[in-house]
Image (tube, rainbow, N blue to C red):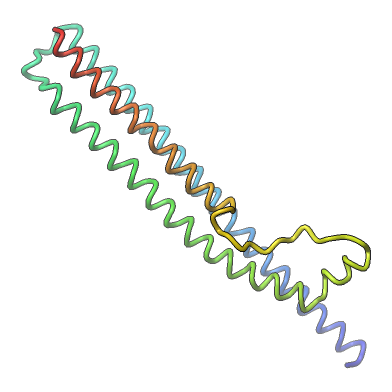
Length: 177
């Protein structure tokens, strides 16, 4: 190869490596944004759950609403089931989207690694007594992707726990009155 052909070859692979890196970044940012959206929705559900149970409790204690009208057990269980369903749906749909983003991220990461190999970037770094920070992931259960999905699942449990406590408390207070 002539030096011009080598330069063209090198530039072509550098551009493709950059494109692969930008693709990885885009899908990673997408994952972060979906997580933020899910967290905001779950925070809203948590706030609404606390307000609704507080309102139910206030109406029962004030005596302004007859208990027969309230049927506290049915209402509490209905609200609990609604909170569980909505929290589950938000997390399952978000985690599915994050998984799809991560699959695209992995494709770009594979291409990025191949371009690094073609360009012999690690060899040049090793000549300088430097070990690249780039790591190929062997176990997806030890990546940020896995932990993001786990955090969402745990966080979605908060409105469900508050709903359980609220339901038990509503039934307990209504039985006292």
